[in-house]
Length: 101
Image (cartoon, rainbow, N blue to C red):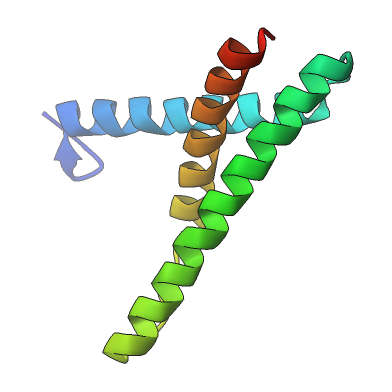
């Protein structure tokens, strides 16, 4: 059985992955926009700083590697958004546990 040219199992897996990524994106946006006390603001601040630094570091390494190998820049914004959301959510869980949020 196929769905849009791919096996049904693969289509269901892809749909689950896309729903999971959507949930990570929504979690990231809600935590950034939600007002809270000083401790929760510090948790979001530290989480945002970590995710931003990790993504900037990855992009710098990508630029260096592409420059060294003379390859064109091929950054996919969808992949970059999902990696940022995953890093942010993992860091958010870490800082909430560490700082008691």
